[in-house]
Every structure is written in structure tokens, then in C-alpha cells.
Image (cartoon, rainbow, N blue to C red; front, side, top):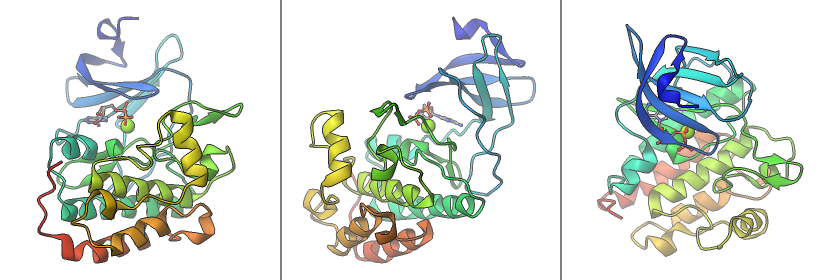
Length: 258
Ligand SMILES: Nc1ncnc2c1ncn2[C@@H]1O[C@H](COP(=O)(O)OP(=O)(O)O)[C@@H](O)[C@H]1O
Ligand SMILES: [Mg+2]
């Protein structure tokens, strides 16, 4: 279907903002709003409604005639943390600040019994404050096959086990690694299967090896965040963010160009 010729509940598509594993995001508008219109490529449940200063809400949602779910969200003009990183605008202090806002969002979600399930820098949208987007556990694993991105996924999620908020703590640790080093965890493993195996079995990555200007203390933080067993991790996202901020305090001088 040519999405640009379809009107989604009165929203008219202007252009494509980006494409993820299971959706395409369009810039769209109605009479009142300019929105980011997310259209999913496979059936999925509606994400939970959460109200928090660091969580991107939705204006409206609906389904097209063929049953495709769409969500109209506020359009965030500042891009996302992954794009800012690739543009060379992610000094450690900014990374710590972003992680801290996302952690507040996650701790709120977890207190409501909601796991995000897809914590990664491209879901950290940047307005005056950071907004965590894309709640709802993604179909990482079906019939033993890892279907979508595994780059930041916790071992228990990759195994298809039941997960809790500590899976998000793991992925937040991996996101921190990416924002500080420019690389996702286990980037050198090779194939996607090898990345999955590394999440399951290899020790957490050492940020200071890739980015020698980082204090060694950050390695301990990422190691604790990305422990294989949830009970060995920080038990909340906020604890991780506080430890990261403290460890990075001495790294303020680096301008973060990759
Ligand atoms: N509300 C929004 N406002 C502006 N850009 C957005 C919004 N939501 C998503 N995007 C952008 O659309 C692109 C695709 O998003 P998505 O389909 O969620 O894939 P992913 O998160 O895997 O990159 C991303 O680059 C993201 O920055
Ligand atoms: Mg996304």
C-alpha cells in the first residue's frame, strides 16, 4: 500500500522520518497538530498509556482497514540520541544526562508494572528534555527465533523468559555503553547470532578499552548493569543512572566526537 495516499484517522502523511524493525514513522499533520505517525508492519497490542515528564505519550491511535495499528505522537524535532551520537554530539556528560532522564521514565513504568522491552538510544527522543518512546514488549523471540534487533536485549529476553524491569536496566547499561563509546555492546561479535550468544555468555563489554579517556569506574557500572542474572544488576534504572553520573564526573573534558 502506498502510505502517502492513505489518511490515518484524518492525519495526512507528509514524509518518512525513519524506519525501524517493525514500523515506519512518518511526519504527518491534521488541522491542529504536526505529528509523528507510527505505522506498524505486523499486528501488535496497543502500548500502555503512561503519564510521565520523560515518557512520550500518544495523541491518538487507530487501525487502518487492513488492521494495521497506527499511533499519532507529538513530533519531536530534536532527533534521537543515536542520531546525535552519530553526528558527534554526545560528550559523556550529555550521555549521563540522557540516561538519567530515561531512568526516571523507566522507574515510573516499572512501578506501574510496565516493562519497556526495547530500550535503545534511537528510542531516546530529544526535546527540551529527553522523552522515552516506544513502550511495549517487542516480538524479540518467537518459536525460539530472535526476530528483531538483539543489540541491546537482556539475556532473559533473548531466551524468551518472562522479564521484569531489570531487563530494561540491562538495556539501559548497553545504551550507556553505546553513547559513551560509539559502538553497541558486542559490536565485534560478527553475525546477529553471535551477538545473541555474546549477550548470553560473554562478560559485559569494557567501555574504557574503546574510549581510553573514560574513567575505569564506568566499566564497573556497565558490568553491574549488564550482569547476566537480573539479581546481580542494579535493581532500578535510577541506581544505574546515579552510579554512571558519579563515575563520569571526572570525564567532563572530552568533547565526544566519534
Ligand atoms: N515522535 C517522534 N518524533 C520525531 N521522530 C521520531 C518520533 N518517533 C520516532 N522518530 C524517528 O523515526 C525513526 C524510526 O523510529 P522507529 O520506527 O521507532 O525505529 P527505531 O526506534 O528502531 O530506530 C527514528 O529515527 C526516530 O528518531
Ligand atoms: Mg523507536
